[in-house]
Length: 385
Image 1 (cartoon, rainbow, N blue to C red):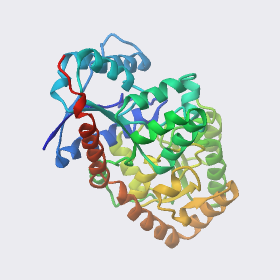
Image 2: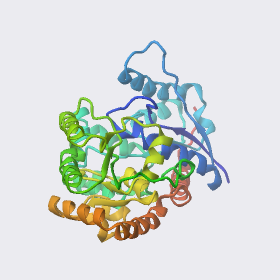
Image 3: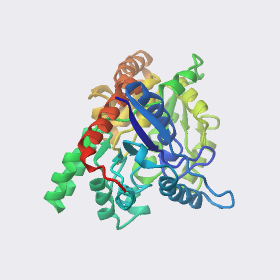
């Protein structure tokens, strides 16, 4: 039986950097991968594309218009013709608001989707900075969904533990809904950008946003040491303008001309091509529920250096050669892999194999199964308007 799905992607910004990484990264790539793969697993997809009034000025107004347009689409597109809706980003179109719309219209379609972060994760500083005081709203959104997709076992345990500290019964209800599915990388787009060209120098890439929870200052400590002792180069793939590390990056560019590079908001093709050309990827994060930028780097055969915490042991399948505990261990590992190209390439090959667990062919069948489970569980809810 083919299931009919109304799919709500998240807001994206193709040409301008944005405070949330999904808008310029996985909100584009993972969504494309999911939508392309779902029909192979018995799910027919209609993608909602809200219109944004052209007179709106500013990325935040455009994003809010996108969110509002998603709700309005439910009034124009007969959702009773669909078995389920899938909301890619549960902090955009709120599942509890979709639930209210369905209740008023007498629609019984299942409500499913992802949460990629949460106020119930104490390390998710982004939420507390930009959306303070919304812990209960965040939890209400989860409980309004029939099934909630999450990206890692680590993240699932964090949610359940912290909700249980406040409301054990809410945690029990949440546990019934949570399903770990991972997040697919867009292998079609990554493979299309593949190149055998290499940079003249070993290249270290930092493909994370420059927000405090990614701890870019620690990365710059490591980069400065590497640039001082090795003939290598560093590439930061996101904009640094207006961030706390902007002046330090400029100072390093002056000190190491041509070897400290800032890509800004690259096109996806240019970004993936860069990953194929790079040698080492570094994360210094203090918060990570999955790590799609790391999985992309693993897939493109980078030797990754990652904190031994959060979701990183999980996505690397506990590859000990890629994980570090302290800044000193990071500095030592980076020095070693810059000196020993053969060992660097060995680790990169191992990580490439482990990244194959997150191809669309591996992840999307799990998403399809969650949608089917939600539909089956909610069939008795169908009523006439």
